[in-house]
Image 1 (tube, rainbow, N blue to C red):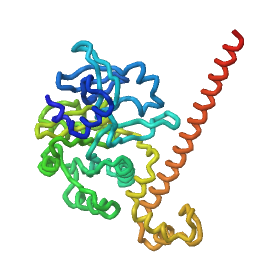
Image 2: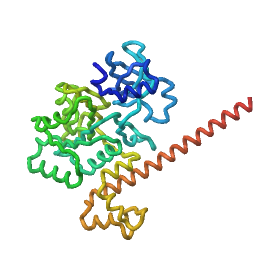
Image 3: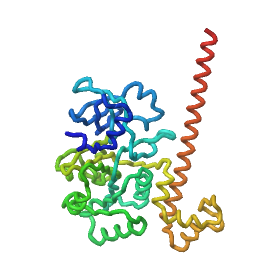
Image 4: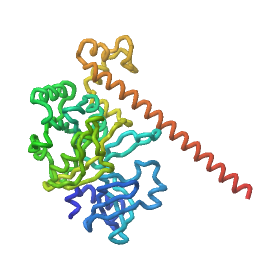
Length: 354
């Protein structure tokens, strides 16, 4: 397989030369398993680890390779290789790391389009769609909404859901599909371009893996039915994988995400909630929080029905979440800095005493 089939282009080659990486093999990370990586190269798929230098120079997990990354590596044998460098990313989809204070988890790198998948029968939630949109907008990734499992509801309900989405989310393509009958698959296939990278974002059990299997024509991901007792997917893809489709499109399958905490994404919020931002420009106070201030144009627009109340509440929730995350990052950096100072003083004292 040639690198161009994985999305490699002249811009990446220029970066490779600028970074003095001509003597290394270039490949794309297609799978990640707890700091062990599978990298696809022109010589085949290689298992890889990062160098100790890359590990110790990394300030956070963001500096580690992620699925979709282009990396420079040295091959020691066909079973093992070492990643020395990561080429600059042109887009990064990330979220707050679950259970880790002030840290970011990269979902996928170098993505062009994201399929935001929701099941029409049980998973449909516009608030969550707006959350995914915010992540995409802050990541410079073009979103496409995919409403799956429409075979489980009638046409009237499908049309109602699509209209509800359009009422709150503007200028985003919506595709309704059935993984059983393949209805709508022709439209998805038609928009997948050769050399472009697509990823799937959505909860577990919404049909992402089945969609991937059907698009690829292969059983790449094991899927199970929805548990009737818990109404949750029995199968959760435990890692991210990158697959090249027959038509040349590149698809990343992501785990089902129970938590989608947004990170520093002011621009993402502004794009997703552009109507609220436009009204906010007419607020009486420049630092208006849109909560209870006199002369708040946003609150006035909500009361008049010009801004959807549920969308406004979702915006305010994500603004609070973003502010909390930003304060967490500042606090974590301060702790790291203080620890660094303490370690430096300790070493200084040790040298003076001996």
